[in-house]
Amino acid sequence: MEIETYQTFAQRFVALKSSNGSAGALVLRVVLLTVTAIALTIFGSTAAWLAGQALMAVAIMQWFFLLHDSGHRHFFATPALNTLVGHVASVFCLVPFTPWRTIHGQHHLWTGWHDLDPTQAGVTLGDLPRAQRVLVDVCWAAWIPLFTVAFGAINFWNLPRCVRRFSRDSREAWHHAFSMAVPLVAHGALFWFLGPAQAMHVYGLGMAGFFVLSDPLLLSQHSHMPERLADGEPVFANKLWDQDDYTRSIVFPRWASRHLLFHFDVHIVHHLFPNLPSYLVGQVQQEVGTVNTIDWWSWLKQAKRTPAHILLFSTRQTTGFDF
Image (cartoon, rainbow, N blue to C red; front, top):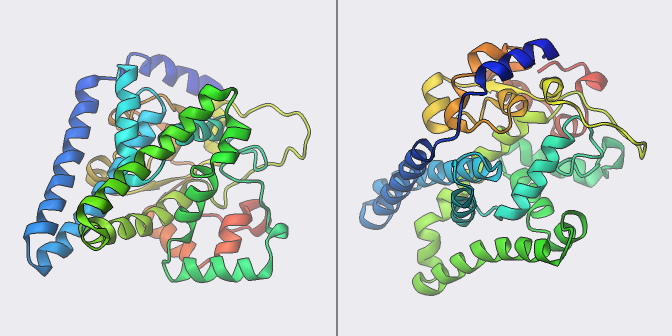
């Protein structure tokens, strides 16, 4: 986006403020959806259980969206509420809150720099052994959610890496450890109280569904987009108004984007205005434009026809695939 246009947008939307009421309403909706899913799972027939697990998958995905928004510290107007909801959401989506908040913040800072963005891990196509290329290609084609699980393990559940790279002192290191302990203790208690079989009956299939849904949604945002390599040289982070060059939005029906995805699909707007909470994104998205924007079904068809090792570890510049 041109800097003059971006500054005009910034001036127009500076009046948009975080609201405890709007954020609380979204949290309440997700709580009610989760309770409904559990009720169907526990008290219903097999058909009701399947419906409950489908709702559970959506609910867990929405808890992840709440964690994402809370990590930007602008979902609620009250800072403590962002931290509280972030930790609660981590129990459902199995993403530790403090590692997420820290690493995702670095991702926004270094978007477009492949070897500086911590979510990219500096891997290039030339580094990938043949066996791993086959593995990622098979999992992508078969809808096996390898990428969400591996991405979470490498980035958010790796305590030594979090302490080494993202903790400035022992206090921050303990925050990372505490955030990892929260979902572990919660699920451990649930397994102890219900037993492993019953616990998995309540949310196991829904969690698997969440992982399956997350893979294409997350990969749509930056995979196979232009990027650069710093190669150890000192470089400047890309300005917010330039990050639409390295980011993709996928277009869902407006009702799905608003009510199911909480505007998580409008990723370009999120990178241009990262402190804008999801419930305000709808007031901006129509005016940002359609560069690097594609219909969700078109993207999914083209992406699924592309081997995963090409989709993940190559870019438009090298393949010419413009999607």
